[in-house]
Image 1 (cartoon, rainbow, N blue to C red):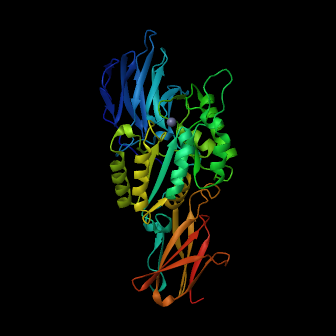
Image 2 (image 1 turned 60 degrees about the horizontal axis):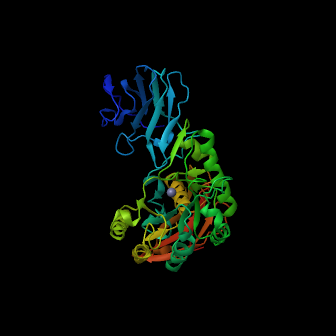
Image 3 (image 1 turned 45 degrees about the horizontal axis):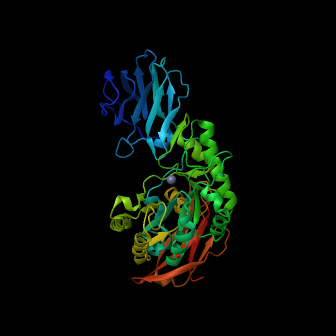
Length: 450
Ligand SMILES: [Zn+2]
């Protein structure tokens, strides 16, 4: 269920003209006419549901601009938002590829009202568990186990993203990442050249090199849409996303089904559907919030250091993104190397992986719980329950057990009695045991003195 928002106070009608700042706000939602003018009234009509009433116009074009809050207590689930008219008919909305919370809504002259609303995702989203659900503290002899925040006992996750399939990604970024032992996510526009167009696809021009990069299986390819040009309607939007996904899955067939999607800066998309529709239809996910690393933003190396430190402190996933790298490009090679040097200095504390792998771990973890099973002395038994679809969220979760030193060597087995390999780290007179379990709802037993 979506959280419930308090209703706004009684709505007041206002005359709004174009060119004004956001004169009006209802429940944190700001709106004004981008084009044309008229009398408009907004009224909260339920949780994440806002009804706008407008006076019919003489026929001049009118476009309403609406900005939904993305953070804070009034934040909207932006990926689930659609617009309908008074009869419930779908209304096409225009948005920037990287600002989905900002809606441009063309109003037909005869239109007297619209409703902006968040709809429940089809099939719902994975339920979230709490930290408490993810650990067992008082097992036999004081033994305990928890799902690790990140694999390998790392304190934070870190992903490096590279947009637009620039040739420098193949010629410079890939070898430099390899030199430092890091993995990247290449957000590509793999759409083929179009007949009659002089625009050449940078990805298709180097197709064999992209295939070679994918075959080494350390980096990930992700969806930046087929041609980085937006779409004018639902069918075009689906085609731009689907075509890119199909080509990437052909070039990198070993990658898991889930793929990161970013619609691209400077693109505009007109659709009647929610962003969630496209994500679900294509097994994609969208993660907003990433530190832009182009030199034009200034002092990027220092910005990265701060970004990484704040994410380490909070156990979160730090995300950064680049465009082309090299002389005269988005970021200089020297600055790129300096950033990788900082990350390398924290290597023992950070988990670096592709965005889809981190997303798979994080989502399965956040929907998992450990349920104790009755166990006697010298045995800790539990079940790892998950709310995620094991076909998509198939990356194993890492578990950390703290066991009494008296347990000595242990055997860990799954519900079928098969042994699960583990590593053992002595800590403060007890022992820390790490092992991986697939998020499929299986039981697990840790046995002392096997
Ligand atoms: Zn881009």
